[in-house]
Length: 352
Image (tube, rainbow, N blue to C red):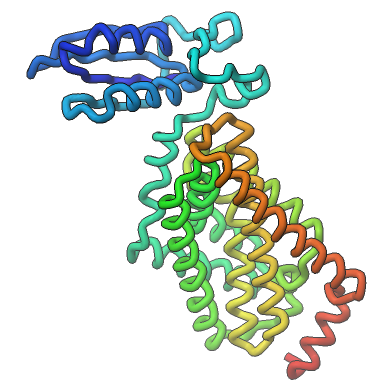
């Protein structure tokens, strides 16, 4: 059901203004008195209108101590709310009307405040987060080392780096520097934890870099860029519809956790070149996921508060990706990414 129940509490003096404001954003609402000289409005709001309703409520009543707004997800509404252009609410005067394409793709998107709430807990560096990262990396490392794809998928489902990655894309899209920095710090902490954990594990196990699951993380190809871009777009599309982070993790973790785990194993055995290749794959995937994630957020009509910052960050990611792509093509042109050369490097490093 693409609708939300929004409970709004205002003072008696603001009832008339609140009623007029609510009527611009939803077709069904009712009013009841609550203690303390206040009134409560319960509104059934289609998802695509929650964003603009909350923005206008915050602008008008956000600074008032007695004001509050709560958003709840609805499973079903009878009679149902029709979602089509004929039943669309009138456009708000000071907002540019959405195009048909934007309205189509944003109709199921949850509001920015709901996105913040969904991602908030994953941006806190706490012991449970670091432990989850370590366990995910170890599972991925052992799965790749033994060539067990199903085990690697298990590490993907855990998806500890999904929250920080989505947080970076969301912060860049809406121009929230604090959110962007918190997400970066959390992602950096998780990256270091994953590397240290897999380096430690590598000292106690044998590692054969010729195993396909490991070998593939030491060879960066243009197809990996397409994979990471698709992962980022699919992840944001599902996340912005309120899907579970664990389910979305399959799309994101495939591009982030395995290369980190492979790098840790390579470094633990002295395969420095292969470890750097795996880190290069991780960096390339991270750039792609963020770039396509921001683009997908914008495509769904997420409103940036600072367009200059949003476009600036997108431009930085795009330039870095072009540099990585040029480096990647150059290496492939000279055979640096070929299987034969990697096998030669392995033999040169000690015949392991």
